[in-house]
Length: 328
Ligand SMILES: *Cc1c(COP(=O)(O)O)cnc(C)c1O
Image 1 (cartoon, rainbow, N blue to C red):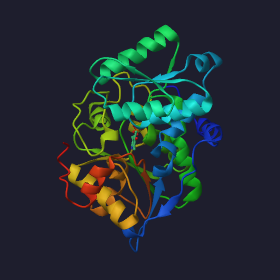
Image 2 (cartoon, rainbow, N blue to C red; image 1 turned 90 degrees about the vertical axis):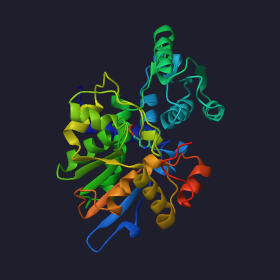
Image 3 (cartoon, rainbow, N blue to C red; image 1 turned 90 degrees about the horizontal axis):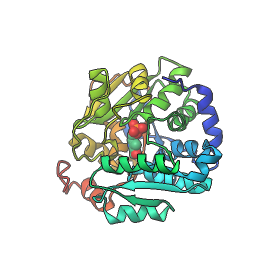
Image 4 (cartoon, rainbow, N blue to C red; image 1 turned 180 degrees about the horizontal axis):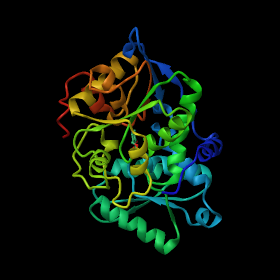
């Protein structure tokens, strides 16, 4: 693996400062105790509603003149796609987002509204990815993937730099894990500063590709299952180059959560801290709500990663009128 260095993270921070928020780290009294303080890193406040704008902005700022002229491309319809569309527009670069026929019209409109060109291809995420590869090969467009890319990881790692500055006593950081760009970047920063800081990851119980890949010792494909933590779904890539190795090196624990625990975490953040989160973003507080066997320390930072949730469904869920297992 080509090494990503602390210098890469500091340079990323300078590059993205103009368009990314230095998010607040707020105390969470409802999660604290006599022996533990807990602070929440509110990436929910970022433009586009999730941390992914950090990595996307860093990668967009690093394009060569040829890359800028040809544009950037990705296959994400979720937080990465939105972030890349915004970052590209700010950088004066055309973004292209490839989707399958199955993506609902409101999502297509949201991506177009950020100035990206939408390419509809096939019936699945795999078909959309083939279209990304075709556009890259035929038109020289630069693919900026959601996690397994040094500039993306370095961008997400700027969260770690901010945590170290704002919370020097921090002994534990809790991070949602899907493809592992977020936790990989943060771990690079905090383990470099102090290898004793524990990095604890959380994924949903079903379809957790990073967890399965760490167990197997190589990237494995998992069956995708609907989850409240929809932003944590998807594989890590069978050709994974960076994030599996970073997770293997730096993750102290990776815990899996049932849908009921994810729902309880979303409810708690809303009712006790007044914070709206998507499922993927709430998972980090689960080991503070009940003992899940994690070694949580005395000075805990929890990364609350995004807030892009269907508001009707969210309201039903926090009012307790929706069954967390029901994804209809
Ligand atoms: C992408 C995403 C994650 C997971 O990040 P990875 O780098 O894929 O591990 C967590 N929360 C939200 C809200 C996301 O959009």
